[in-house]
Image (cartoon, rainbow, N blue to C red; front, side, top):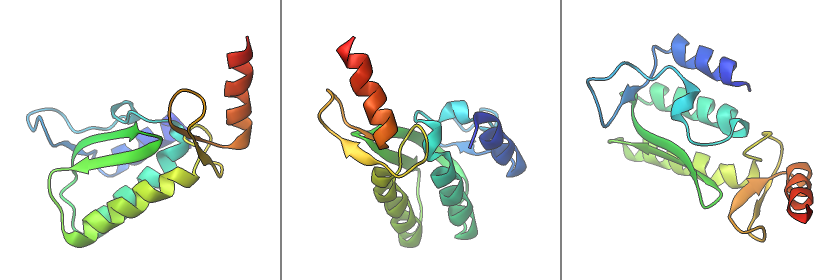
Length: 128
């Protein structure tokens, strides 16, 4: 999924509300997400599921941390929190850059979930 496709999706749902700064415009750009585009389909599906569960669309932060997705909201039901936990756990098997099946890599100086191809690119860059 491209940045443009994610932005179009966010626009189509009226954006997300900033959970910290409620006086700001709705978030309609994937630039708010501090993670790679490989996780956009996972995030999109999570947002759709949360809305179906009655989520108010207030988002505090979406980011990568220790190789996995983190999706922070102000408040939600147990079912919403379980759905967020599922997406966060699933992210450890999805390449953050490509969206292909990935593995948590811990041997390159930081934690990141990458497919084999992206992992090899990192290793090649480190050799130079």
